[in-house]
Image 1 (cartoon, rainbow, N blue to C red):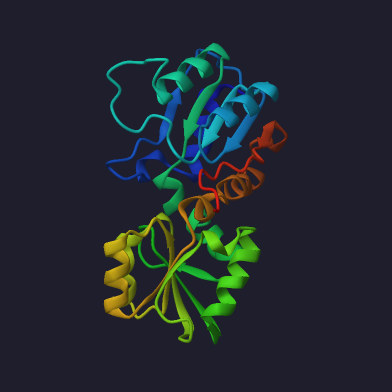
Image 2 (tube, rainbow, N blue to C red):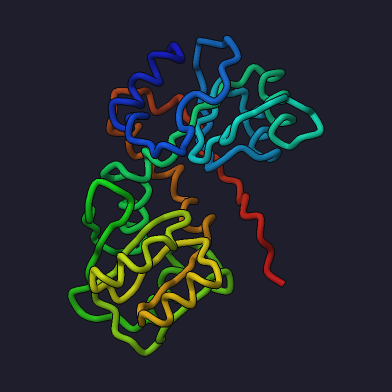
Amino acid sequence: MKLNELIKKINEFCPESLQEEWDNSGLQISTGNEDIEKVLLAMEITSEVIEEAVINEVDLIITHHPLIFTELTKIDSNDVTGNFIQRLIAADINVYSCHTNFDKIFGGNNDFLGNVLGIDCTPKNDGFLRHGWYMNPENMGNLIELYSFKLDIDKRYFSFVGSLDRPISKVAICTGAGADFIKEAYEDRCDLLITGDVKYHDAQLAKELGINVLDIGHYASEKIFVDAFMSFIISSDIDEDMFVLSDLDINPFTLI
């Protein structure tokens, strides 16, 4: 399949036009290799992912996080991003990213995470936040254990603000960094917000408002991208046999 043809088909279920103004979804690297026979799906580009792509002899890597996010003034091999770009071009590997547009679409990261956690989600609007409900209120402590199991992530990676004794009925979900939605989730009468990258002052706000916030970590909330994206490929007319799913654990954090 030609690269431009594949990108066109991807845009049918994940339009680049849906991305946020500050985002940089879309084609990151075009090496001139237009014939795509094998594709690697990965959360983002790392040294390990590049090695995985080379070993699998892929022509294209599709990621969630864009490799090129801010304006580049030079490509320097001593710079991490510059080094990645040089290695990928040398290996004749294209890179394409579906970031905030994939978070927003129905069935994308936010909905898929809800399904993994056993929460039936509905979009609150045309943005990131999702709402879900437990028909019978759940114990917060039990939910933390359940989420740890479902995501295959040690719960020691989680951070929690609120009351472990509060029954949980209504849940808000935002993958990635969703602390900006704490007040909105509170105003929507949610008992719990599940997200990542919650900072100190965000946690203090949640505590004062009285809403439970579970920070499962940016990695844990978006590691589902590979499976979520593949679910769209399977339901499309794109040949699923072209795709290799990255099985690397690229979580940069280590428990101590």
